[in-house]
Amino acid sequence: MAAPLWTVNDNDIFTSIKSEQTINVNLPIQTENATNDLEEFLNNHRTPSSTIYVDMDNTIAGFNIRLAQLYGVDNLLNADTTTTSIATQITNNSPGFFQNLSVLPQAINNANGKGLLDLVKSIHGSYSILTTDTTSTTLNNEKISWVNSNLSTFPPTGSVNFATGFNKGPYGNSNTILIDDTPSYIAQFKAAGGQAFRYIYTTLESGSLPDGLSLVNNRIEGTAPSVSTDTTYTFTIRLHYNSGYVDRILKISIVASINRSMAYDSARISSERQSRTWKDLNLNFSKNPVTGDITKLSGTESVKRSVRNLIQTNHYEKPFHPEIGSGIRDLLFEPATPLTEIFLAKKIEETLVNFEPRVRLIAVNVNAQPDENSYRVWIEFYVVNHPTPVIIDTFLERLR
Image (cartoon, rainbow, N blue to C red; front, side):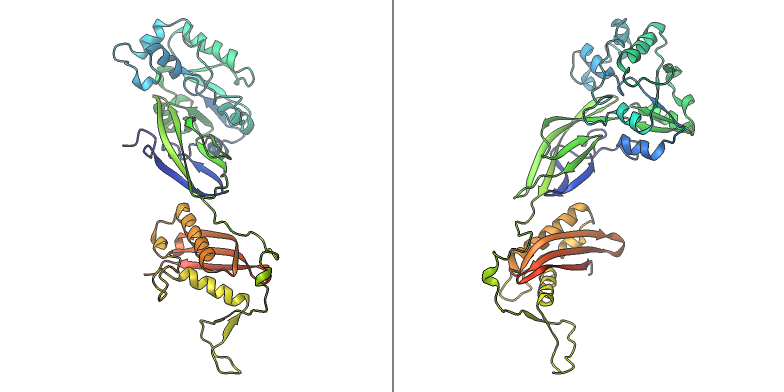
Protein backbone atom coordinates (compact mmCIF):
# COMPACT_ATOMS: atom_id res chain seq x y z
CA MET A 1 0.00 0.00 0.00
CA ALA A 2 1.21 3.50 -0.80
CA ALA A 3 1.77 5.61 2.28
CA PRO A 4 -0.43 8.69 2.88
CA LEU A 5 0.14 11.36 0.20
CA TRP A 6 2.55 9.25 -1.86
CA THR A 7 0.93 7.72 -4.94
CA VAL A 8 3.73 5.21 -5.59
CA ASN A 9 5.38 2.44 -3.61
CA ASP A 10 9.02 1.93 -2.68
CA ASN A 11 11.34 1.22 -5.63
CA ASP A 12 8.83 2.36 -8.24
CA ILE A 13 10.22 4.09 -11.33
CA PHE A 14 8.15 7.25 -11.19
CA THR A 15 9.46 8.75 -14.44
CA SER A 16 11.57 7.81 -17.44
CA ILE A 17 13.36 10.47 -19.47
CA LYS A 18 15.73 10.63 -22.40
CA SER A 19 19.42 11.26 -22.13
CA GLU A 20 20.08 15.04 -22.02
CA GLN A 21 16.34 15.81 -21.84
CA THR A 22 15.28 18.95 -19.94
CA ILE A 23 12.45 18.16 -17.51
CA ASN A 24 10.19 19.67 -14.87
CA VAL A 25 8.41 16.69 -13.30
CA ASN A 26 6.20 16.78 -10.19
CA LEU A 27 6.89 14.18 -7.53
CA PRO A 28 4.15 11.50 -7.28
CA ILE A 29 2.33 13.14 -4.36
CA GLN A 30 -1.40 13.78 -4.08
CA THR A 31 -2.90 16.39 -1.75
CA GLU A 32 -5.88 18.72 -1.71
CA ASN A 33 -3.86 21.02 -3.97
CA ALA A 34 -4.30 21.19 -7.72
CA THR A 35 -0.52 21.60 -7.77
CA ASN A 36 2.01 20.94 -5.01
CA ASP A 37 4.34 23.56 -6.49
CA LEU A 38 3.91 26.71 -4.39
CA GLU A 39 5.47 28.92 -7.07
CA GLU A 40 2.91 27.76 -9.63
CA PHE A 41 0.06 28.17 -7.12
CA LEU A 42 0.99 31.75 -6.24
CA ASN A 43 1.43 32.75 -9.87
CA ASN A 44 -2.02 31.36 -10.66
CA HIS A 45 -4.00 32.69 -7.69
CA ARG A 46 -2.55 35.84 -6.16
CA THR A 47 -3.46 39.33 -7.29
CA PRO A 48 -1.68 42.59 -6.40
CA SER A 49 -4.33 43.28 -3.75
CA SER A 50 -4.27 39.80 -2.18
CA THR A 51 -3.43 39.27 1.47
CA ILE A 52 -1.27 36.17 1.93
CA TYR A 53 -1.44 34.49 5.33
CA VAL A 54 1.41 32.13 6.25
CA ASP A 55 1.08 29.60 9.05
CA MET A 56 3.88 29.26 11.59
CA ASP A 57 4.00 25.74 13.10
CA ASN A 58 5.31 23.11 10.62
CA THR A 59 5.18 25.62 7.79
CA ILE A 60 8.11 27.85 8.65
CA ALA A 61 8.87 26.71 12.23
CA GLY A 62 10.06 23.23 13.25
CA PHE A 63 7.10 22.32 15.49
CA ASN A 64 7.14 18.57 14.72
CA ILE A 65 10.92 18.43 14.93
CA ARG A 66 10.87 19.82 18.49
CA LEU A 67 7.98 17.57 19.57
CA ALA A 68 9.72 14.46 18.19
CA GLN A 69 12.80 15.34 20.23
CA LEU A 70 10.72 15.63 23.39
CA TYR A 71 9.07 12.26 22.73
CA GLY A 72 12.47 10.69 22.07
CA VAL A 73 11.72 9.70 18.48
CA ASP A 74 12.99 10.84 15.10
CA ASN A 75 9.58 10.90 13.44
CA LEU A 76 6.53 12.32 15.23
CA LEU A 77 4.43 9.59 13.60
CA ASN A 78 6.16 7.14 15.98
CA ALA A 79 5.47 9.15 19.15
CA ASP A 80 3.21 7.72 21.86
CA THR A 81 0.77 10.61 22.23
CA THR A 82 -1.75 8.51 24.19
CA THR A 83 0.37 8.48 27.34
CA THR A 84 1.41 12.12 27.04
CA SER A 85 -0.65 14.35 24.77
CA ILE A 86 0.92 16.97 22.55
CA ALA A 87 -0.72 19.74 24.57
CA THR A 88 0.72 18.29 27.79
CA GLN A 89 4.15 17.96 26.20
CA ILE A 90 4.10 21.63 25.21
CA THR A 91 2.95 22.70 28.68
CA ASN A 92 5.58 20.55 30.42
CA ASN A 93 8.32 22.16 28.32
CA SER A 94 7.21 25.76 28.67
CA PRO A 95 8.22 28.49 28.90
CA GLY A 96 10.57 28.22 25.95
CA PHE A 97 8.82 25.66 23.73
CA PHE A 98 7.84 28.03 20.91
CA GLN A 99 10.70 30.44 21.45
CA ASN A 100 13.22 27.65 20.77
CA LEU A 101 11.67 26.21 17.60
CA SER A 102 14.06 25.96 14.67
CA VAL A 103 13.47 27.74 11.37
CA LEU A 104 12.71 25.10 8.75
CA PRO A 105 15.48 25.10 6.12
CA GLN A 106 13.03 25.40 3.23
CA ALA A 107 11.29 28.44 4.79
CA ILE A 108 13.55 31.35 3.86
CA ASN A 109 16.96 32.18 2.39
CA ASN A 110 16.96 28.84 0.60
CA ALA A 111 20.06 28.14 -1.48
CA ASN A 112 18.07 28.01 -4.73
CA GLY A 113 15.96 31.06 -3.85
CA LYS A 114 12.81 28.93 -3.86
CA GLY A 115 12.08 28.78 -0.11
CA LEU A 116 8.51 29.48 0.97
CA LEU A 117 9.07 33.08 2.05
CA ASP A 118 11.59 33.62 -0.76
CA LEU A 119 8.80 32.86 -3.24
CA VAL A 120 6.26 35.02 -1.41
CA LYS A 121 8.76 37.87 -1.41
CA SER A 122 9.64 37.60 -5.11
CA ILE A 123 6.08 37.00 -6.34
CA HIS A 124 3.98 39.14 -3.98
CA GLY A 125 6.25 41.17 -1.72
CA SER A 126 4.36 40.89 1.58
CA TYR A 127 2.57 38.48 3.92
CA SER A 128 1.04 38.18 7.38
CA ILE A 129 1.44 35.45 9.99
CA LEU A 130 -1.73 33.49 10.90
CA THR A 131 -1.11 30.95 13.66
CA THR A 132 -3.21 28.99 16.14
CA ASP A 133 -4.11 30.71 19.40
CA THR A 134 -2.62 28.66 22.26
CA THR A 135 -5.04 30.35 24.74
CA SER A 136 -1.93 31.16 26.79
CA THR A 137 -0.66 34.74 26.79
CA THR A 138 2.84 33.49 27.63
CA LEU A 139 2.94 30.98 24.75
CA ASN A 140 1.41 33.46 22.30
CA ASN A 141 4.07 35.99 23.26
CA GLU A 142 6.69 33.31 22.60
CA LYS A 143 5.32 32.94 19.09
CA ILE A 144 5.52 36.70 18.57
CA SER A 145 9.09 36.70 19.87
CA TRP A 146 9.99 33.82 17.53
CA VAL A 147 8.66 35.74 14.52
CA ASN A 148 10.56 38.90 15.50
CA SER A 149 13.79 37.00 16.07
CA ASN A 150 13.79 34.71 13.02
CA LEU A 151 12.05 36.60 10.21
CA SER A 152 13.92 39.90 10.35
CA THR A 153 15.23 39.57 6.77
CA PHE A 154 11.66 39.53 5.45
CA PRO A 155 9.32 40.48 8.32
CA PRO A 156 5.56 40.02 8.07
CA THR A 157 3.17 42.91 7.69
CA GLY A 158 1.43 43.98 10.89
CA SER A 159 1.14 42.00 14.08
CA VAL A 160 0.86 38.22 14.38
CA ASN A 161 -2.72 37.02 13.85
CA PHE A 162 -4.02 34.35 16.25
CA ALA A 163 -6.83 32.06 15.03
CA THR A 164 -9.08 31.26 18.00
CA GLY A 165 -11.03 28.06 18.49
CA PHE A 166 -8.79 26.17 16.05
CA ASN A 167 -10.60 27.89 13.19
CA LYS A 168 -8.94 29.94 10.44
CA GLY A 169 -12.13 30.29 8.42
CA PRO A 170 -12.87 33.87 9.62
CA TYR A 171 -9.78 35.06 7.73
CA GLY A 172 -10.88 33.56 4.44
CA ASN A 173 -12.48 35.62 1.67
CA SER A 174 -12.14 36.14 -2.08
CA ASN A 175 -9.05 38.30 -1.65
CA THR A 176 -7.07 36.20 0.84
CA ILE A 177 -4.68 33.25 0.49
CA LEU A 178 -3.59 30.83 3.22
CA ILE A 179 -0.41 28.71 3.16
CA ASP A 180 -0.78 26.09 5.89
CA ASP A 181 0.17 22.46 6.57
CA THR A 182 -3.04 21.41 8.36
CA PRO A 183 -5.88 19.99 6.20
CA SER A 184 -8.66 21.16 8.56
CA TYR A 185 -7.47 24.77 8.34
CA ILE A 186 -7.25 24.50 4.56
CA ALA A 187 -10.86 23.26 4.42
CA GLN A 188 -12.10 26.03 6.75
CA PHE A 189 -10.40 28.73 4.73
CA LYS A 190 -11.72 27.46 1.40
CA ALA A 191 -15.24 27.12 2.80
CA ALA A 192 -15.10 30.81 3.72
CA GLY A 193 -14.25 31.74 0.13
CA GLY A 194 -10.46 32.03 0.38
CA GLN A 195 -7.71 30.38 -1.65
CA ALA A 196 -5.62 27.89 0.31
CA PHE A 197 -2.46 25.88 -0.32
CA ARG A 198 -1.71 22.82 1.79
CA TYR A 199 1.98 23.12 2.48
CA ILE A 200 4.21 20.08 2.31
CA TYR A 201 7.90 19.93 1.58
CA THR A 202 10.35 17.28 0.44
CA THR A 203 14.04 16.64 1.07
CA LEU A 204 16.58 14.28 -0.47
CA GLU A 205 17.56 11.90 2.34
CA SER A 206 19.83 9.34 0.70
CA GLY A 207 21.22 8.42 -2.68
CA SER A 208 21.69 11.09 -5.29
CA LEU A 209 19.77 12.50 -8.19
CA PRO A 210 21.29 12.21 -11.66
CA ASP A 211 23.81 14.96 -12.45
CA GLY A 212 22.03 18.04 -13.73
CA LEU A 213 18.76 17.34 -11.88
CA SER A 214 17.68 18.85 -8.58
CA LEU A 215 14.76 18.72 -6.14
CA VAL A 216 12.87 22.03 -6.06
CA ASN A 217 9.41 22.66 -4.60
CA ASN A 218 8.26 19.03 -4.73
CA ARG A 219 9.42 18.52 -8.30
CA ILE A 220 12.49 17.29 -10.15
CA GLU A 221 13.89 19.79 -12.63
CA GLY A 222 16.97 20.30 -14.79
CA THR A 223 18.69 18.57 -17.70
CA ALA A 224 19.42 14.86 -17.52
CA PRO A 225 23.00 13.68 -18.02
CA SER A 226 24.20 12.02 -21.19
CA VAL A 227 24.26 8.24 -20.75
CA SER A 228 25.51 5.60 -23.21
CA THR A 229 23.30 2.84 -21.80
CA ASP A 230 19.90 2.90 -20.14
CA THR A 231 20.55 3.86 -16.51
CA THR A 232 18.37 3.78 -13.40
CA TYR A 233 19.09 6.07 -10.43
CA THR A 234 17.77 5.23 -6.95
CA PHE A 235 17.32 7.73 -4.12
CA THR A 236 15.14 8.38 -1.06
CA ILE A 237 12.83 11.39 -0.81
CA ARG A 238 11.38 12.41 2.57
CA LEU A 239 7.91 13.96 2.47
CA HIS A 240 7.27 16.22 5.47
CA TYR A 241 3.65 16.95 6.34
CA ASN A 242 1.52 17.93 9.33
CA SER A 243 1.74 14.54 11.12
CA GLY A 244 5.41 13.74 10.59
CA TYR A 245 7.25 12.43 7.56
CA VAL A 246 7.17 9.47 5.17
CA ASP A 247 10.18 8.29 3.18
CA ARG A 248 9.89 6.82 -0.28
CA ILE A 249 12.57 5.07 -2.32
CA LEU A 250 12.16 6.34 -5.87
CA LYS A 251 13.82 5.60 -9.18
CA ILE A 252 14.40 7.65 -12.32
CA SER A 253 15.19 5.81 -15.54
CA ILE A 254 17.28 7.62 -18.14
CA VAL A 255 16.99 6.13 -21.61
CA ALA A 256 20.20 6.31 -23.61
CA SER A 257 20.38 8.00 -26.97
CA ILE A 258 21.59 5.94 -29.87
CA ASN A 259 25.27 6.53 -30.62
CA ARG A 260 25.21 8.25 -33.98
CA SER A 261 26.89 10.91 -36.07
CA MET A 262 25.29 14.29 -35.41
CA ALA A 263 26.71 16.05 -38.47
CA TYR A 264 27.67 15.46 -42.05
CA ASP A 265 31.22 14.10 -41.98
CA SER A 266 32.81 14.11 -45.43
CA ALA A 267 35.96 12.36 -44.22
CA ARG A 268 33.98 9.59 -42.60
CA ILE A 269 32.02 8.77 -45.71
CA SER A 270 34.66 9.50 -48.34
CA SER A 271 34.77 5.81 -49.21
CA GLU A 272 31.05 5.98 -49.84
CA ARG A 273 31.35 8.99 -52.16
CA GLN A 274 30.74 7.17 -55.34
CA SER A 275 28.55 7.97 -58.27
CA ARG A 276 25.92 5.65 -56.81
CA THR A 277 22.29 6.52 -57.33
CA TRP A 278 19.67 4.97 -55.09
CA LYS A 279 16.29 4.12 -56.49
CA ASP A 280 13.07 2.75 -55.10
CA LEU A 281 9.51 2.20 -56.24
CA ASN A 282 6.97 4.92 -55.72
CA LEU A 283 4.31 3.13 -53.70
CA ASN A 284 1.65 5.32 -55.25
CA PHE A 285 2.22 3.05 -58.28
CA SER A 286 1.61 5.92 -60.66
CA LYS A 287 2.54 5.45 -64.33
CA ASN A 288 5.44 7.24 -65.97
CA PRO A 289 3.84 9.34 -68.73
CA VAL A 290 6.78 8.69 -71.11
CA THR A 291 7.76 5.06 -70.55
CA GLY A 292 4.47 3.77 -69.20
CA ASP A 293 6.39 2.04 -66.41
CA ILE A 294 5.81 2.49 -62.67
CA THR A 295 7.40 5.72 -61.51
CA LYS A 296 10.53 5.45 -59.38
CA LEU A 297 11.99 7.49 -56.56
CA SER A 298 15.68 8.35 -56.66
CA GLY A 299 18.33 9.97 -54.43
CA THR A 300 17.18 11.25 -51.06
CA GLU A 301 13.54 10.56 -51.91
CA SER A 302 14.28 6.85 -52.22
CA VAL A 303 16.07 6.90 -48.85
CA LYS A 304 13.09 8.66 -47.26
CA ARG A 305 10.87 5.92 -48.69
CA SER A 306 13.16 3.29 -47.18
CA VAL A 307 13.01 5.00 -43.77
CA ARG A 308 9.21 5.02 -43.84
CA ASN A 309 9.14 1.36 -44.87
CA LEU A 310 11.47 0.32 -42.05
CA ILE A 311 9.45 2.17 -39.44
CA GLN A 312 6.20 0.61 -40.61
CA THR A 313 7.60 -2.93 -40.89
CA ASN A 314 7.06 -5.36 -38.04
CA HIS A 315 9.46 -8.13 -37.15
CA TYR A 316 8.88 -11.36 -39.15
CA GLU A 317 7.11 -9.51 -41.96
CA LYS A 318 10.15 -9.49 -44.26
CA PRO A 319 10.77 -12.98 -45.72
CA PHE A 320 14.02 -14.62 -44.57
CA HIS A 321 14.87 -11.56 -42.41
CA PRO A 322 12.72 -11.68 -39.27
CA GLU A 323 15.11 -9.31 -37.48
CA ILE A 324 14.33 -6.37 -39.78
CA GLY A 325 11.61 -4.01 -38.60
CA SER A 326 10.80 -1.55 -35.85
CA GLY A 327 8.16 -3.42 -33.89
CA ILE A 328 6.44 -0.17 -32.97
CA ARG A 329 2.92 -1.31 -33.74
CA ASP A 330 2.31 -2.72 -30.26
CA LEU A 331 3.48 0.53 -28.66
CA LEU A 332 0.87 2.50 -30.58
CA PHE A 333 -1.82 0.91 -28.40
CA GLU A 334 -0.11 1.74 -25.12
CA PRO A 335 -1.36 4.78 -23.11
CA ALA A 336 -0.32 8.03 -24.80
CA THR A 337 2.21 9.15 -22.17
CA PRO A 338 5.64 10.81 -22.31
CA LEU A 339 7.16 7.40 -21.51
CA THR A 340 5.52 5.86 -24.61
CA GLU A 341 6.84 8.76 -26.70
CA ILE A 342 10.37 8.01 -25.46
CA PHE A 343 10.09 4.28 -26.22
CA LEU A 344 8.73 4.95 -29.72
CA ALA A 345 11.55 7.37 -30.47
CA LYS A 346 14.14 4.90 -29.23
CA LYS A 347 12.75 2.04 -31.34
CA ILE A 348 12.82 4.26 -34.43
CA GLU A 349 16.40 5.31 -33.69
CA GLU A 350 17.52 1.69 -33.19
CA THR A 351 15.82 0.55 -36.38
CA LEU A 352 17.44 3.21 -38.56
CA VAL A 353 20.90 2.81 -37.00
CA ASN A 354 20.78 -0.99 -37.43
CA PHE A 355 19.16 -1.34 -40.84
CA GLU A 356 19.65 1.86 -42.86
CA PRO A 357 23.39 2.51 -43.38
CA ARG A 358 22.74 5.45 -45.74
CA VAL A 359 21.29 7.47 -42.86
CA ARG A 360 23.18 9.50 -40.24
CA LEU A 361 20.60 10.40 -37.59
CA ILE A 362 20.37 13.87 -36.10
CA ALA A 363 17.17 13.66 -34.05
CA VAL A 364 13.92 11.76 -33.60
CA ASN A 365 10.99 13.46 -31.87
CA VAL A 366 7.66 11.81 -31.10
CA ASN A 367 4.61 13.72 -29.87
CA ALA A 368 1.31 12.09 -28.91
CA GLN A 369 -1.87 13.35 -30.57
CA PRO A 370 -4.50 11.71 -28.31
CA ASP A 371 -7.49 13.32 -30.00
CA GLU A 372 -6.44 11.82 -33.34
CA ASN A 373 -5.32 8.45 -31.89
CA SER A 374 -1.91 8.99 -33.42
CA TYR A 375 1.67 10.10 -32.83
CA ARG A 376 3.43 12.77 -34.82
CA VAL A 377 6.96 11.65 -35.72
CA TRP A 378 9.64 14.09 -36.80
CA ILE A 379 12.94 12.59 -38.04
CA GLU A 380 15.97 14.60 -39.13
CA PHE A 381 19.01 12.94 -40.70
CA TYR A 382 21.81 13.22 -43.24
CA VAL A 383 22.02 10.98 -46.28
CA VAL A 384 25.38 9.73 -47.54
CA ASN A 385 26.62 11.94 -50.44
CA HIS A 386 24.09 14.61 -49.52
CA PRO A 387 25.33 17.42 -47.22
CA THR A 388 21.89 18.92 -46.51
CA PRO A 389 19.74 17.54 -43.66
CA VAL A 390 16.61 15.65 -44.67
CA ILE A 391 13.39 15.81 -42.63
CA ILE A 392 10.49 13.39 -42.48
CA ASP A 393 7.34 14.63 -40.74
CA THR A 394 4.70 11.92 -40.54
CA PHE A 395 2.00 10.39 -38.35
CA LEU A 396 1.71 6.92 -36.86
CA GLU A 397 -1.94 6.01 -36.37
CA ARG A 398 -3.63 3.44 -34.17
CA LEU A 399 -5.50 1.27 -36.63
CA ARG A 400 -7.05 -2.13 -35.99
